[in-house]
Image (cartoon, rainbow, N blue to C red; front, side, top):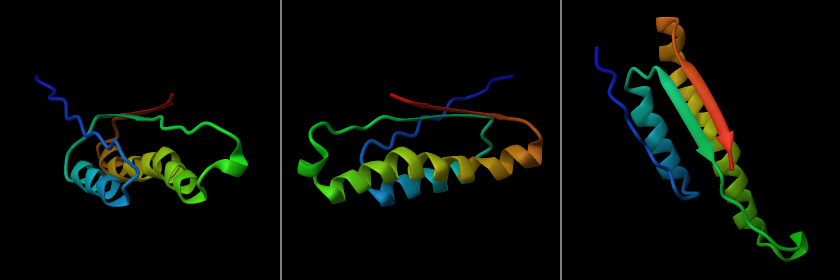
Length: 88
């Protein structure tokens, strides 16, 4: 049996893009979710833009969380599936 792969890339901190990806995944039967978030900023914390830092946390943590929540109901219903979360 074939198991087609679906790649959904969310490459920015746009909440709408992350939500669109979660919505797309929720509509499909997903057997494995590989979620990788790895944006970063560098420099003294006092000099970083607080809004940009918050957006980064939202993508790296909440974006992955939302994707997991999108696929989890289908995995639980089928009693199968796996989730791999990584960060770089």
